[in-house]
Image 1 (cartoon, helix red, strand yellow):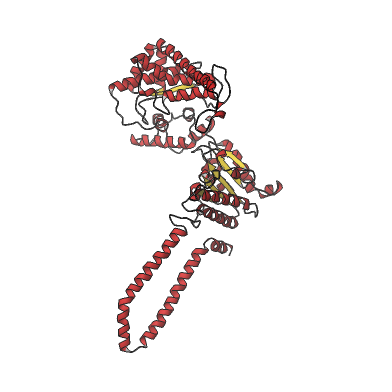
Image 2 (spheres, rainbow, N blue to C red):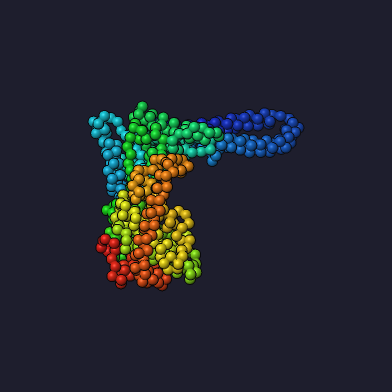
Length: 560
């Protein structure tokens, strides 16, 4: 009986429409029977006359009734009650069928520890009463994409044995004013019904930032009004959860910083708990590789530890994608096991992209070879914390060549020496071209991501934000930056800061020139090896430097 009552509450509109249609059908049958009885009581001439009239008018009547009226009501409900243009809150929501075991959530140990506390409270009602009878109603998961926020929410629901009602932030954004608020009402209405029916419910809203940005004043056309109404309805529903204990938990996920959300959403009493989901560390990456490699056939020499050290800053989805890609490479070669070579090729595809169909001229190949040789030599000899793991003159992602660097370990706060080393690696190609050809190419500039742009960005940050300029001026001058990018500082101060930026760049170029001029033979040899092989892997790069008796800067060689 309880299930029937809840079913009627959710689908009362459908039940009402079906009942009306059935009533109309029954009334039509009764009327048809009555009409037929009276018709047969008429004289023969009158029946023939009426039959003729009916033969003319009845087809038109049925055509109008059975085409126009259904079309009218169909368009009405389509436009106003959940159609493609205006889903005003009557769209049916389905609970997700999830079966993610807690032990299958790997690569996010810190986030799991935070989530487990909530799981224990949901499972242990006695403990809940001991601590005051209140449950955390809102949990916000913040972190980069592909790190397992949705997967963790599914595991929470599975571990607690509660239904998961999923939604995305874009579900609450639409053309009509009030559409998002109506959809929000539907979501929580069904969540309350599921909570009463199954003892609890977890609402999971992915990409909550789609509708949860700070509220704005109306500027016309109702866009801001609808956005504000959606947030207000969401806040009302969150507050309403405290009025009656329905055991409803709201879990939201976002890829943006929590500061970018409306302050009223993330205040205490709504989303009380924040779980920061980060990219996995070395130990977690090892566990991820072992987990995903355990689901495929691999050769005996495949080393999860080695792959984890190479895949620095990879997310769990990146690791999964890498192993899937390695499987495709193996299948292409008609093999049923994945080798280390397949995984290395898959790493290149995930990290650097597919090889381009751009065909370089001999002159461009030579120019690119010296360009990349400059990057590689300075990176190997001068950078205190990076390995050079690959050099290539094969075009990828629109680049004519590339040198791949990888930190020896995760670093989140590089010091001045490391930042200067980054700049030296950036400008090394410029110096190598100038030493070899007497001039430089467009490859050193050309917008975001180019050598000069990256070098300038680092040097600018060192001076304007980190107080690393030689003039002695210190402070984070971004605090004086206007909305248009200009700085609210004295012109003389600006000139001194700009002079510091140029001094850093020129000093790095001078240091690189000294190294490459001294190692001109190495530059020639490295460039020629690139021209012959087009791509050099880590072991081949190490072999070149060993040939010249050179070791990496301030550290032993790291084997990959």
